[in-house]
Every structure is written in structure tokens, then in C-alpha cells.
Image (cartoon, rainbow over all chains, first blue to last red; front, side):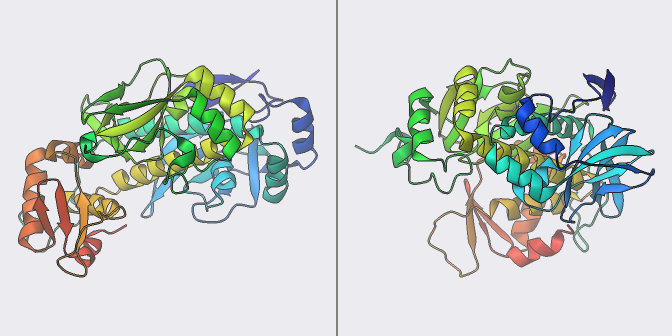
Length: 166
Length: 242
């Protein structure tokens, strides 16, 4: 067993079965596995960049990555994740460019599945959507948890010219 | 006899005129027939609590008409509004899918129709109808996108006027069908109190009141009860940096 670390909470995952594959029947897993490309990438590699269309779905096999939301040149850390975590599902489902960055914090072994192959298998096997929904639910909980923790005091920001409000 | 709350109850999803506009409801006829059998239609007054944060997930609510606020408690113990749910949204979805407690409390902001589906019925429905899985995933992706946008916005340390201008611009995407006095005027229905707007913007009610007065003084906004008229949208847009 290995562990996916998300916001300091450890979730047990099997090294061989990531969070997407775990609930899927073997037949569908094998279809996905046929299109897998495994790569080792150095620390600092940006797997997903905000606003840039994604060509692959990413499965982290080893190492750790940071999920962050870019905000005017800054980066707000949402979570750190490790083996078994899958990234890129949001863009696969919505077809829109990603809203977040995913960056390797150390050397990572990553499985890539080309977007068009994943989409093709998804269309033929819609039961994958249930597995996707579970992952997206978890992602939403992490984002909502961060929203609870971010201080909501307003900073100076931009005000009205000569204004006295705020 | 005029219908109560001045809206028609939609009993039959197959005959709903809004189904194509709503993200979740635009389903195949076979799925809608199945949905019809498992949903329980209810109408709630303004201020009704559909569920509360931390409660075990009983099921999901499909918001048919009306809006509802999703609120939670911050680490500092303050009540914060995560977002406003619009018609067509499924509430309690992530909890029902993952069998985890509800993440937020949901309270209606106006008279609302919501169709309740128990968790077990919903999960069976999800397994039996392929097109539901797509809708559920799309809805969750949309919710994540909203959460990431909110994180980005909070990280920017925007001023309160900017945050309120952003809210007004967001609400202006759903204008009221209202006879306009001026061509560029946008009428919106705002059922949030100033206290609730303050919970959204992370400020005090007094500051919200001052900012709204300033917007009115500058001729950007008119407020008559729950009907607000944005009279200078470009000015609000200029105030918003992102």
C-alpha cells in the first residue's frame, strides 16, 4: 500500500490501482491501460497549466505534485497529492481549459493517457462517469475546505478614486 | 385562482419548459420517465433549510425554480456564503456520490421548488442511465470551477467595492424580464440581505451599506426593494480587475 497525501490527510491507495481505475471493472481498466504512456519527469515539471488545453490525463505513480490556483502572478496552494491521484478529469469532462496548475514537487513517475483515447473509451463506457464523479466530489471537498480556511478580510486592493468607502 | 408565491409548480419533468436550459435536466426521455418515478416534488418558502452542513447525506435536491444559498462556517467561526445555486442545479450531489456529510448548509432565498431524490434511488438512477453520469460529472466540474474561481478571487485581496461590483456583474447574467427605463439598464432580483452580501464579500454589513450607497450616489445602481437596476455596467466592469 502507498498513500495519497491531500491537505495533510492520508488516504490509503493501492500503488497499482489509482483512484480512477479502482472502482472500474477489469475490462474497462484494460482498455485504458492499452493507451498508457509512462514517463519519469523531473521536479518542477508543469503537468497541467491553467488556460492551456490539455492533451493528456495524468495518473501519478510516484512522487508528489502540487495543485494550485494561479492568481495575478501568485499561486495559491490547494493541495499536495501523491501516488494514485488522477489529474485532468475536469478538462476531459467540460472540454474547457484547466483552471489550475499541477506541478511536480520532486521527480515523479507519471502515466499519461491521450485525451482523444480517453474520451473515446469514455463515450463507449459511460459507467466510467460514476468513478469520475467520485473523484470530482473529492476535489470539490478539498476546494471547499480551502475556502473555509482562507481569511476573508479584504485587503487594500483598488478603491474608488477619492472614495471614503471601506 | 392565482398560484401561491406567483409561480407554477412543475410536476412533470417531461413537460418542463426549462429542461433544456438546465444543466442537469436536459436528459433523454427514458431517463426523465425514470426520474419522474423517484422524485418527490416540494415547494419551500424563503428561508427554508434543505439540509445542514455535517448532516449525513439523505439524498439530492434538484432545484427547479428559485435560488438557494450554500453557506458554511469558516475556520474563524464566521458564516460564509460559498455560492448561490441557480435553477437546474443538483444540491448535495458530491455528498450523495461520495457518501460523506453535506459540505454546506442550503437555505432557500425565495419561494422555491425542489425535487428530492433519496440517495439510494439516485445512485441506482445513476447506474442505470448512462446520460445521468455525464450530467453529474458536468455539474461537479462546474462546482469545482466556481470554487477555484472563488479561491482565486479571495487570493487577490480585492477591495470591497470590487467584490460587490463582481457580485452585481455575476447576478446581471440572469436579468429580470423587466420593462427598461433606459436602454442599458439591467434589472436583477436580489433576495440577499446586506448581511448576506457581507458574508459573501468577507466584510461587515455596514461596509456593504456604504458601498451600495456610493454606487447609488455615482448613478451606477438603483435599488427598489428586491429589484436592483444596474444603470452603469461599464463603470462596475472598470472597477473589477480580474
